[in-house]
Image (cartoon, rainbow, N blue to C red; front, side):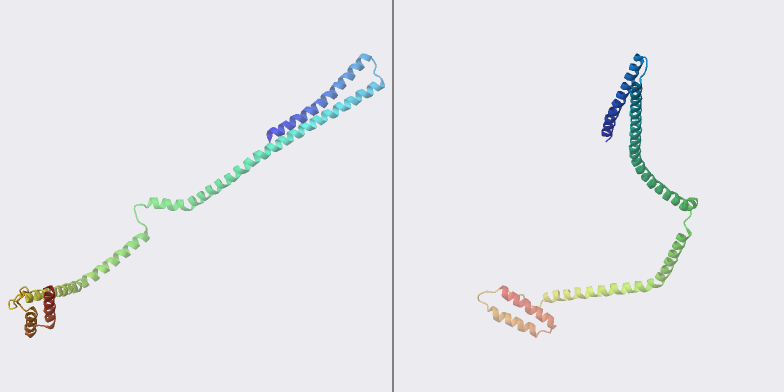
Amino acid sequence: MEESEQKKFLQQHKARSETYSKAAANMKKYRKKGNKGGGKTGLATDKELKNMQILEEEKSKLDRFCEQSLKNAMTQERRRYGFVLERQCSLAKHYLAYHNAGVSSYGRNLDEWQDVARTREYLPESVENMFALKLRQLSIWQDDDNFSSETILDDDRISISSQLRKTKSMDASCLDIRSINDVSSLKPLSRAKSEFNINSSNNSLVQVLSKKVFPLDLKNVFKRKISKIISNN
């Protein structure tokens, strides 16, 4: 943009300068002719006045052109620098708003921060009250625990003893079944041979066991075991 404007200015300035130079040369030529003739006639005087008028017009045109060109150049330069200045002002406003926010924040809180710094060896009153309330609640809970600790221990003992009794009863039932399996009065069954009647011997054993006085559950257990032995044989 600057190069094109400069090129345009130089071309127009050259044309106007040539016109002015031509008018000045004509004026100089007519003056030389008048000096050589010794006396100026009316026609020569009119031509000289006309050339002088043309020279003054061309000079005024050249001056106006230079002034207008300088004005345009200054306007464009101002526009460019004004654009940059506008951006700088916008950025400065943002910086100013940021620093104003910082100043207001410091102005509101600086005294409070200084008070905190001066009393840094002590906790605030609200925090002290909170801890005092917590300690009172803990002391009340400890007193309640002291009163109820005996009952809690008794309940624990009862629950543990009941669990032990249940375990002992279950173990005793298992031991009773083992002892019944090891009864010496019951003869062990021999393996089946071809000369023995397996069905009759097993049936007679079932009849013998059924005549004994045993609980119903134990009878069922023996029956299942005997039937299993028969199926295995």
